[in-house]
Length: 256
Image (cartoon, rainbow, N blue to C red; front, top):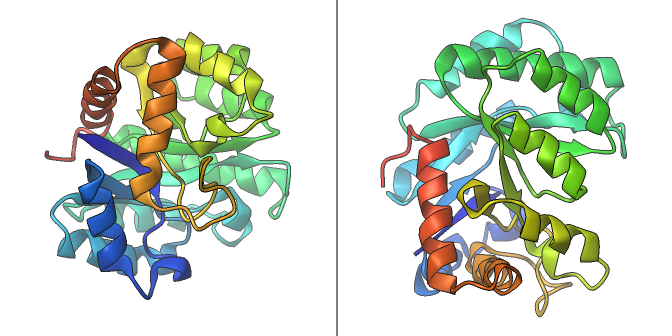
C-alpha cells in the first residue's frame, strides 16, 4: 500500500476522467491520496473531491505564486475556517518561489509566515514549496520552531535536505528522482532516513520515467517508490510500509 502525498486532482487535466484516475491509482496499490490546494477559490471543489472519496484527503492554502493576492492577516481566518473541514489535514501548499517570482518576495514571506503561524495554532502540518529560496525558507522555519511539515517535491541538495531534517521536517520525493540529470537528487534520497521520507506525484505535473512527457497521475507514485527502494537497496514493501506510516504520522488528522 502506498500514499500519493501530493497531487492536484481538481486540476483541469483530470476533469474528464477523475473516477478512472482514482481507480488506476487504487489498482496500482496507491490506496490513499492527498489532493493539495493552491488557491482559496478552489477550496470547495477540492473538499468535494475528498468528501466523495473516503481514501482522499485535502489541504487548504495559497501557493507562493499567488501570495500577492493574500498578503493581509484576513488570510489566517480564511485558513482556519476551511481547516474546520474534517478532510482538510494540512495547510498549503505554501512557501517561497524565487525562480518564477510571480509574487514579490515580501508578499511570499508574509503569506508563508501566516501559514506557519496558523499551522502551529491548529496543530496542522504545512506543505512547503521552495525553489531558489533556501536561505529565506530556513529563516522562516527558524522563526517558527514548533511548525511541522514537509518539503514537497524536493529538488534540492543533500545539505538543504539536512537543514529540513534538522528542523523536524519530512522530505517528499517525486518523479523528478527518475530524471536522467537528477543524480544529485538521487544522492539526497540515499541520505534522507527512511522514517522521514514521503512519496508523491505532484500530478498532473512531472510524470516519472517511463511516462515523462505524459500527464502524470497518482498511479505513477509506484515508479517513485520503486526507485527509492532501489536507491536504498531495500524492498518496495519496506518503502511502502515506511512512507505510509510517515504520511499518517505527519498528517495525523487523516484517518486510515
